[in-house]
Length: 202
Image 1 (cartoon, rainbow, N blue to C red):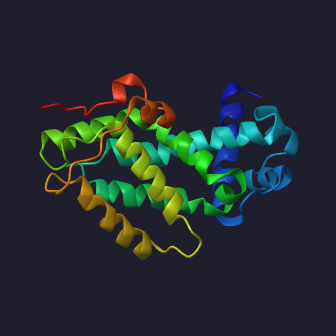
Image 2: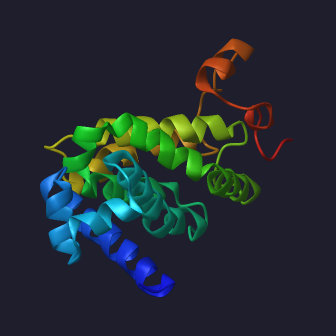
């Protein structure tokens, strides 16, 4: 088998995984192979175990579905970004309930850390986001939104309603100052030193 055919098989397997995840939760390796049109041995040749396959599939979702949301956002429209972020993650709700949505959300936000910092910086420069917001604030706000709004009973309308309630607090017109975080808070939240201050400082 040529290298090109090998890459094509790996791609078919990952596409099959994403399709089945959105429909069935955690399908067997045999079901994945059948959906991809390859043999089970071919699946294991590319992905020696389920963990390796899941990790590769999630990386593909991050790169193709989540990263463009953040990098392509205009005018720091966090309502739209947050809503669509929740929608994409929610698309895979059947499998996330099996593998752990908290773990997957953390991986997604880690992958998207730098684009989110840039989104925050642009919003502060343009005066549409409050100046005391720090990157760690966006990380944890989105984490709470994703974990809280991916209930089986949450529709797109439900998600948009409650995201819309939360985000006005990010606007420059917000009335109260944000309580400061102590060093030990940053440590517990896993915030590196360079993300412990607003990207645009007065």
